[in-house]
Structures are given as C-alpha cells and as structure tokens.
Amino acid sequence: MPLIEAKNLSKSFGAIRAVCDVSFAVDRGEVVGFLGPNGAGKSTTMKMLTGHLRADEGAAVIAGFDVADQAVQAKQHLGYSPEGAPAYGEMTVREFLRFAADLRGLADPAESVRKTLELCRLNEVAAQTIDTLSKGYRMRVGFAQAVIHDPEVLILDEPTDGLDPNQKFEVRRILKEMAARKAVIVSTHILEEVGELCTRVIVIAKGEVRCDESREKFLARGSDLNAVFRQLTA
Amino acid sequence: MSSSEKSPSPGLKPFTAMVRREFAGYFRTPLAYVFLAVFNAFAVSLAFFVGGLYESGIASLDRFFLYHPWLWAFLAPAAGARLWAEERRQGTIELLLTWPITVWQAALGKFLAAWLFLACALLMTVPVALTVGWLGDPDWGVILAGYTGSLLCAGACLGIAAIASALTRSQVIAFVTGFLACFILVLVGYGVFDELLAGLLGSTGVDEIRRLGLWRNLEPFTLGLVDVRPIAYFLSVAFAGLGLSTIIVERR
Image (cartoon, rainbow over all chains, first blue to last red):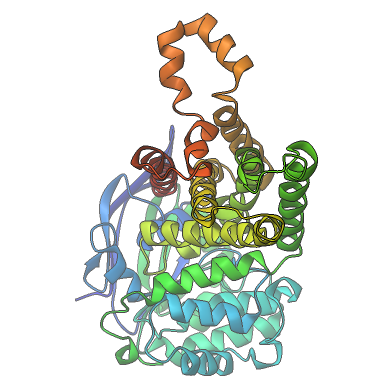
C-alpha cells in the first residue's frame, strides 16, 4: 500500500483551474521532488494532500486514511511544513514544539521535544521566541514540528527556500537520515536538489503532471536541467 | 520518537493543550494586562461615578452590572479578535488544520480559553462586591446571580466576536465588526433606539426584538432572578457564534 495517494485531484479557485486531475502514489523510502514554476499548482496539491484544502474532485489518502473522511487518523500519520514555515511567533521554540507534541497526543511529549530539538539542532535557540529567530532557524522550527511525532508521511513545501548553502545542506542531511523509513514529498524550484535529495521527480505545470519518473531518468534528459525544466513546463 | 510511541487514543489531551495555549497566549503580550486594567477601571468608575453606586445608599450591585453589557460589547470583541484572525495572519491556521485535531475541538478550545480570560477580568472586580459588603448588608445570592449573568453576557458577546474573527485576517477589522454587532444588541432595549425601531416595524415587532437586547436579559440576574429564558438566550448566542465561526473556518 502506498503511503501517499493522490487520486484525480482537481481544484479551482473561481474561474482559475489550479490543479487538474493530478494522480500519483508515493511508497515508503521514496523522496519525491515536486517541481514546477510558481503558480503551477504545487502548493495547492500539497494543501489538498494534507487536508488543508478540500479537493473539488478526487481524493487524497495518507497511510490508508482518506484525508476528508478520516481526517484525524490521516493527520496522525502526517507531518507537514507549509510554505514559509509558519509558527506561533510569540512562543519559544521549546513551548511551540511542546504544544505540537501535546496536540498530537504523544505519549511522552517532553522526550519527543528533547529528541526533536537535538535532531534539528535547535537546542541553542530552544528558549528564544520564534519571532526573534533568523530565517534559517525558523525554517528548521517548521521542519521540527513536522517530524516531532516521527510520521510515516512527510510533506514539505519549499523547506530550503531562502536558506544559505550551509543551512540547505543541514536540512537535506536530516531529510536523508530519515528518508528510508518514510514517504516524503518536497516541493522546490531548486533543480540541484533533485540530484542531491530525491529518488523520484514529479514536474507539474499549469495544474497538470508533466512528468513523473525516477531521478536517474530525469537527470538523463539532459545536462542542462534548467533547459529540461523550461521544456517540460512550457 | 517512534510511531509506536503515539498513544492509541489521545483523549482530551489535544483539547486541553489547545485551551492552555490559547489562555496563556493572552498573557504573552502586554495587551492582556492593558485589557484587564481597562476593564476594571471602567467597571468600577462607571458604577461609582456614573451609576452613583455609593450615593444610592443601597447595598446592591445592580448599578455596577448595569454597565456590563457596554463593557462586554467593547471588550469581548477586543479579546476575541485574535481567535482566528491571528491564525490567518501568521499562517498558522494551515498548521492547526493539518494537525490531528478537529476544527470543532480547536474552536471550542479557543472559545473556552477566551471566555476564561474574560472571567478573570470579571473576577478582578470582586473587591467592588466586598466594598458593598463592608458598607452594608447586601444579599450575596443576588450578587452571585449578577456575576453569573455578567459572565453569560460576556460569552454571548464572545460568540459574536468569534464570527467576526473567523471572517478576516485583520484583528482590527474583527474587533470593529464584532463591536458594532454587539453594540446593536446593547442598543436594543434602550428607549431611543426602540422608538426608532417602532417607527419602522410597529410596536409588536419591537416587543419581540426588545427581548434580544443584552441588558433586557441581564437585568433579571442583577435582581437575583435566575430564569431559564435569559440563560438560554445568552448560551444560544454564544454557541451559535461558536458554531457559525467554526463553519466559516471549515469552509474557507
């Protein structure tokens, strides 16, 4: 059974068709790079997968649970970091993660917070309010709340956006460490990330899947990935 | 931190976490203390200087509670403005709605926390009651009824504030619209406003509408009459507001 299933997902906003009949399935151990130009429908698809947006048509299934009908069960298996990694700015990092742990009903929330702070290298800012953090740390806090319950499914919307090369390296390192046990979708428009992080690539443009193939196949399309990307999304 | 550590049924834990965070959230900014100070300053000065509580020579708090609909109409939307508007502004609503808690649980948690905060404000006026007790010999049962009525009135205003907050990402807009809606409910039952309505609707229509006024429903409490009808009124406004705000959040 795939851990993530998008079944004919469609979504319109007024007259604009943002996502049109998108289907794919992601198994454990896969890290899917979700590529596409801005406004292609990446975030909308992710929002439907995570249950934040209701699909007009089609269904999203997480770990066997339909996100619309069995929302709470589906969300228990899901870790999600939305674009820009929003967080309660007035809380400290530790308080925020503790809140996330409590809200998820974790058996030992204090221990989960301790381990997550360590995993995401957040110990030195644990007592700082999130509003005072640099962008790199904020993104890591967003990532931390998504992995605090060690979910089987991880959906990350541009987790490396705006990070410096060292910070990007750090996020990729953590992701790689846990990827084998999870099904992961990472949206990005950084093409180099494909080679370094992903096992599979889905390119989406104008709300439609333009290509869904293994990393090797995608990289074999040409040496100039930017040209490949332009051609696929034209 | 493995999947097996997830307790099979989190029970009330997520809900209580929600209430705690929201309640503590009020005290994370200086605004809460300003709010409490303003509420107390107005509650006390309106009762003593406008209502003439001392000069009346009667050991009763009805002149104190008389102004509570006005206070709640202003301050419940102030406290309730952040309920959803702030989640939208910070973008955290996307987190909240993808965490394993239902919108209803989240909404109820937020609402109860805000109501609890308003209860704290009300509790801080207890010295007024103690003063009356020191000066005379009031009926404590009546005073308790008055406090109960005031708290219910606060809940009704908060219900309206919750709807206003669910509709926007701006706390200012949420506050202003919430205040205006509550303000209308305060005006209903006041002579001038009723005459205006009578001109439009005829006297029978006005009679029905007058029943919806906040003061009309709070007054019996201040006289020590705890009746089912005003309790039902306040609770239905509170929970209708809670329900509607939840539906708005779910639909968006």
